[in-house]
Amino acid sequence: MKTDVASTFTPPAEHPPVKGTPGIPQAAQPVLPIIPIIPIVARPALADDLIKAAPTQDFNLARDLKLFARVRAEGGRRVVAIFVASTAVTIANMFGQVRLNEWNGQFFDAVGRKDLSGFVHDLWTFLVIIAVLLALTVANTFLQERLKFRLREWITRHLLVEWLKPLRVYQLSFAGEYGHNPDQRIQENTRLLGDYSADLGCGIVYPLLQIVAFVGVLWVLSAQVTFQVAGYDIAIPGYMVWCALAYALIGSGLTWLVGRPLIALNGERYAREAEFRFALVRVNESGESIALHGGEKDEQRHLEAALAAVVDTMRRISSSLAHLTWITSGTGWLSLVVPILVAAPAYFGGSLTLGGLIMVAGAFTQVQGRCDGSSTTFRGSLTGVPQSTG
Image (cartoon, rainbow, N blue to C red; front, side, top):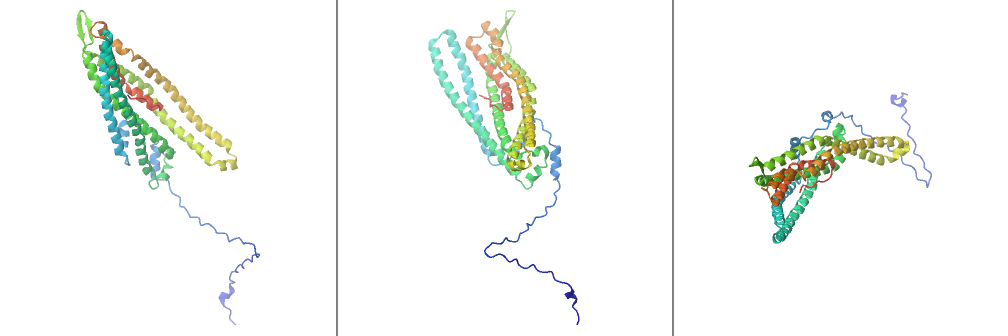
């Protein structure tokens, strides 16, 4: 009898079904999870370029304006409309300031003449002027605040679209310093950018318009400022204008020279703050694993190191701000006396009345203050304290 070759191989025995005990539920057969094989992805080519570009860039107005022009998001026209409306209100405010300066001269001339009826009339005129200026100032403040959050909304929408492009979130993890904490940068840095851009933009437009208005006024008034030399009356064309510009140039130059390092220091501060905040969030979210591994001491050392970086940066900022205050406060206090000093020879020489002196001093302060307005706006943008432009 022939033996079949296939019969020499014993088929694998089948496991008999497990007989369960009646009344007791049986455990189901374990199901092995299917783990997909994820290929090792090489570092994106984009990452190397970004890492090389990681050092902090210095201030460059032309470059920053080009970046604004590249923003493509909903709300851009609204931002432009608010800025145009704010500029229109500022122009109206400019005419009101010129009228207020004229009122100063009329009022103090009435005081010098002891003219009671003129004094009372000028007081009523003053109430009308300040009522109009108050309404314009409130409207300007309202528009500037709306400009800030609309600008932030516009930039944030653009960044969200760019951030959530395919593979962009993954690539940023290899992007070195530029890729650190993008979520916090979008939340916090867009707020700061909106606030500072609105303050600086309005803080540039308003002084320029005030300078245009008051330089003409001060130039005309300078004709009344004459000096007697050897019996001759000598008038220097635009004398008060040149004095105001020179004083403002000295103050602004010193402010820029002393305060310029604060730009990089504040950028470093916000980066260190973001790192410290991220470290705190990570510890809060990893509380279970930290407790299981007893890593509290290690995490405390890590958090203290991040805090020390923040404190060190703020220490350097406080020292630089103290140095800057010597300049800004000093020039501010001197500006109360300088216009009176430069016009005093004409007043004591009899060519300038008391009201004329007050008008000249007021126009001088407006021109000098607006030319030197960069000091106030610059300092406010560095410290984060809003500064008035009106």
